[in-house]
Length: 110
Image 1 (cartoon, rainbow, N blue to C red):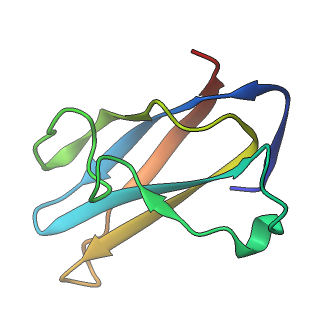
Image 2: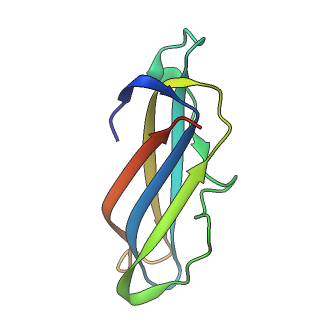
């Protein structure tokens, strides 16, 4: 996604999306935040996986027929004023790829 600038600093990020994931495919989600006391340009900030490896909060089985809801969250981040989300679809077969629809991202101040 593009950089999302916040009026009020956040300390958590939550992403919800509908994913279509046939067998042997995967959806990984990453985030990056611009901490308030960091002078690094946003484009130079590194990406971080949700849940260490980009997996959803609750394991969702693959389904070659239906979209299913996936939730990703990270809490306890230092206060940040901007964030972005990156979605990576992976497959072992170029004819069967994961799809994403209805992606929502929220920055929370906890």
